[in-house]
Length: 168
Image (cartoon, rainbow, N blue to C red):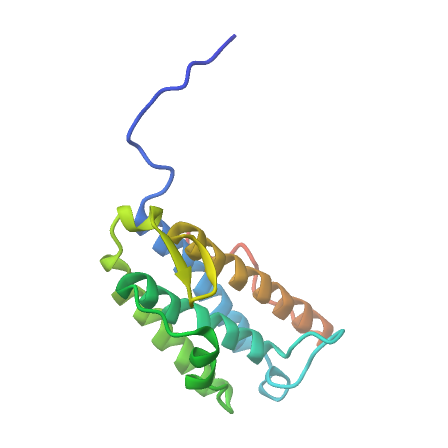
């Protein structure tokens, strides 16, 4: 039995659904930060990987600054973003940075047009591809580094939050 493709204007996912999907991942990552022992957050590592706070900072350096670049078409080089936003000294400060970035994402998101997702952009002046690719990279990078945090938590004898427990 052959099937004939049906052409429609229905997308796989709306822009708003993607924002909610990303924010669901961000909520889960925030819970990982919350359960991490403060004395290990900035120092504990396995196999030469960076401490979880450093991984969180990489996520923070990409998310809101990346979205700002997508919206404004003005990019600060990634190394400058890192210098402008150094790693805080406490978990509380790190969570505040996380929450500010989350609010910035929600504030910037409505300014991305459907056409913009298809446009090619050189993110942070380094990585070139369609805007949708860049956004997917931000989410993929967060999932990857959150998984490292899960490994750290398990090595410390701490049960991490359920990876599937996030809004649909």
